[in-house]
Image (cartoon, rainbow, N blue to C red):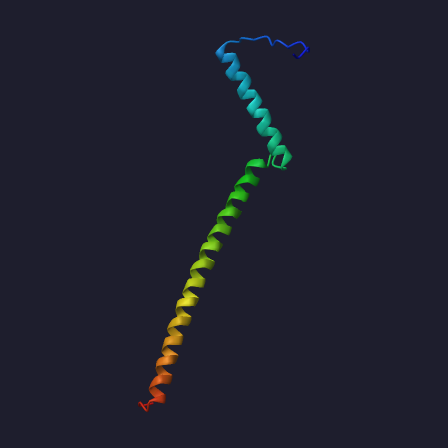
Length: 97
């Protein structure tokens, strides 16, 4: 059998309100550390985050517009190809020019 002694951990009890306050402080410290880690701390942090959101919204709008434009170009190309084919067919079979 294993001869190493088993470590016993002691249970600590604290009031619910104190536990919640401790968790809130730890979460706030973690959030501040995360924001500091990506360079979004300081007085201008809220402004920077708003600018990032605006930039992301503009990028998403540009992607959507590019997709719509691509579909329009494809449809226009197909219509022009059909029109050109119709004109060629009429001329080849002796239709009125």
